[in-house]
Image (cartoon, rainbow, N blue to C red; front, side):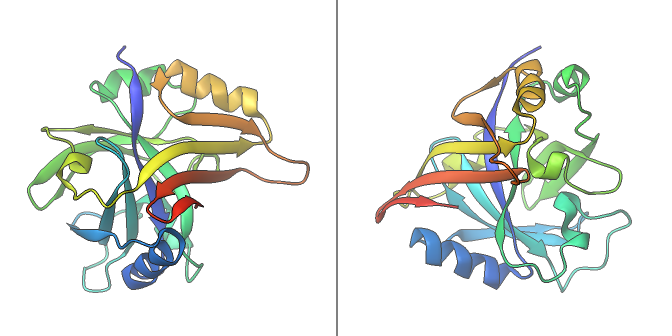
Length: 210
């Protein structure tokens, strides 16, 4: 099985405008135009965090018809919760082998498109996050270059993605099994703290945290 690397981190928001405003308030830069996901009834904005890593702001598209399945990333159950970092996505060159190796099933592999892009991605049947978003979705892009390299460089770089879990050993086993490489760190959650994610990003205004 080939290894996996961090592809992108995901900010969910009740609206795309609110998500963009949140990123601007924290990082001091504005995500670029993305596009629509017709199959999921969502749309997004994107921010480059390195040559092959990016940030996605995603929200339900009010102009799109409701999809025939639950929307991805648990968006149907979020309601008007404020924008926040909810999960992450790893990139594989053999998505079927990566899913087969994973102790915790990341979901069914589904084909997706956005404008001229096409890819396969794992989505649980209920559309919800796995392990509160700490277990990543798996993506395999159909073509290169990857989306991050097509985005303008606004001076932001992902320094680390930290995953805080009450059972860090179990989560680490999941990531080891899919051959994860890169700047992702599994950390024990503090007493009374549930599973959470933290992204440290170098920006033109210094290091910021999502």
